Image (cartoon, rainbow, N blue to C red; front, side, top):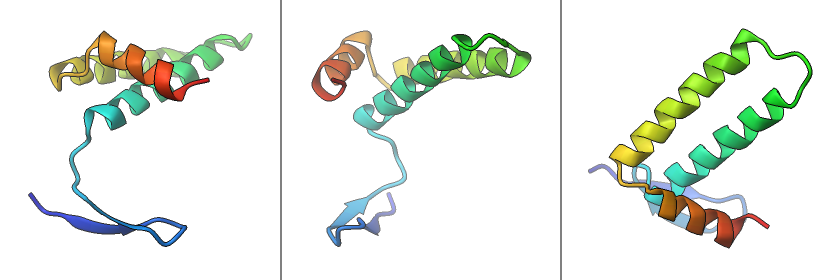
Length: 82
């Protein structure tokens, strides 16, 4: 597995790979569902939000295939989302 050196804006360096961790996948899942909820709260629902919803369900299925459970998701929300 190829490793890359990533430098944060504060100067801290970190070695990363191209693979997503469970935590990162959970963050993506959370962001998609929050974005989908905000789109659906608008008055003008359109086909774009339907496409986003379908894509978010695919991401959700892939997260489950990678081992991200609802328990992992709940723990992430409890720990990082105020």
